Image (tube, rainbow, N blue to C red; front, top):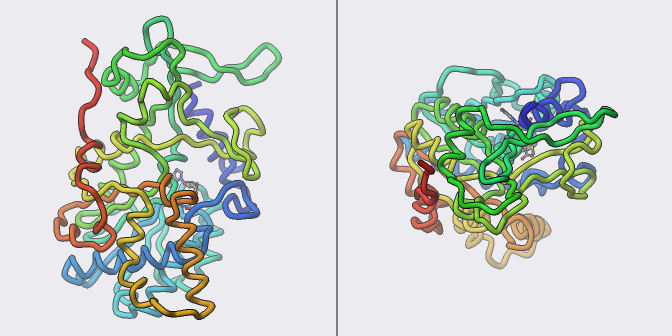
Length: 368
Ligand SMILES: C[S@@+](CC[C@H](N)C(=O)[O-])C[C@H]1O[C@@H](n2cnc3c(N)ncnc32)[C@H](O)[C@@H]1O
């Protein structure tokens, strides 16, 4: 089977999948940290940006936040708690939709969000008239395909079984149309054994996300690169990583169902899919820059504040923005749909237009 099918079962089988388990997968007790597990600050800063989008849109009477892959609902709770106490007017008109693929996650989200029960909707398929779409560390968790350049051409790495019933990699001619298109675009200038990942499903996810809003802003936060960096000939072994109890390794066939499997995001593919789906790229920058813009005003107001709350705020902010923690490896792709006014968002203040342009450059020459 394609690796994407194997990964889909390993992570999302409703009974045995990694993300179906009751146990928390993120934070100190889990397998890895996310910006959400650092504390409520990430959700609070994002809530402020969502509120600014609403204001820039002219304060429409209805506004929808759509979150994809909401895990246990903590981010949604942080956003809604902040909004209720700080911007009652925004809270009143707000609706919070969660796109979730696992029934067990829906149960956990409902339990976390009892306080905001009336605001939450699961499984809404219709597009929202105006709103924001948000996905943190979702694209890296969407099942991807694995490919290897050998004997002068690309092969897809499928998952097969040995005689003794263990999983093993098998090379096969690529058949999937979207995969073949991306491989044609990459061309053949790669060294023997070059192995990497391609995620047509992540591109589909972005197209779907774009279809969920008629007007508004989409935020994708994740680790990843533009295609030129992602498919640099020197990066010969790809970005597939597995996580178990804060240990990283590269064997997805070990402890299947108890191990997270991810790959870095090809943000060029994501941005191209978004543009094809009617969006514009408003910014592409690391999380440090993004949150510095988002928090600038708040930081100024807190100058001289030595309270324990301010100390906690600063500790979380450092973890989220410091280059050695989450500030440099995580990127924000910000997309607008029918909403050029969003260029004035504080979180875009420090973005460099050349970074966004670089995403969409056709860096590889398609083979004949
Ligand atoms: C690494 S976790 C991140 C969870 C959360 N956003 C956070 O930041 O803590 C990846 C999440 O993506 C979700 N996911 C993967 N594919 C999805 C899809 N097609 N639609 C919605 N959620 C998806 C998984 O269920 C999982 O909760």
